[in-house]
Image 1 (tube, rainbow, N blue to C red):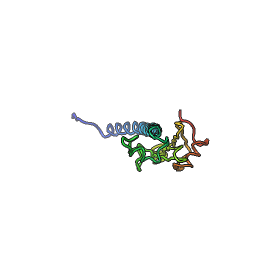
Image 2 (tube, rainbow, N blue to C red; image 1 turned 60 degrees about the vertical axis):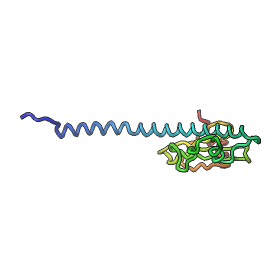
Image 3 (cartoon, rainbow, N blue to C red; image 1 turned 135 degrees about the horizontal axis):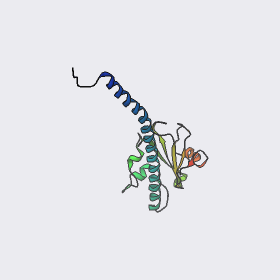
Image 4 (cartoon, rainbow, N blue to C red; image 1 turned 45 degrees about the horizontal axis):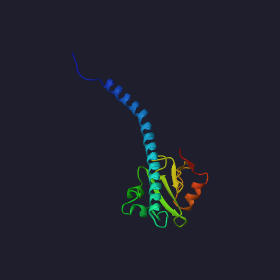
Length: 159
């Protein structure tokens, strides 16, 4: 008798091989996504720093923007309003705070979900030096506390 098709054992072997390949590949894909989120956060912070400098240069009295809305609401806008979305962007939540009556600022990017969307928190200020910390899921709020952490050893320069 000549039968066509696959036996149950052959199908089970194929399913087992596919499951094994998936078990190997999925963690690598998750790591690649996390790295992409962190790269996007770094790039976005550099964009915010450039926008803040452009804003400052365009003012008669050169001061940094009072808040993110000053950069995004200008005509033409210095940066996209979606950068500061309340739900985050590409796994990171960005904040901007003016300090010292417009003489300094700090912008920070924190993972929306620690160790899922990112493992490091990034910050940049008027010096233009991008710094990072992997201090954990502790909230990094914009303002003097972030500036103090940024200027202290908590944040290290990103290469």
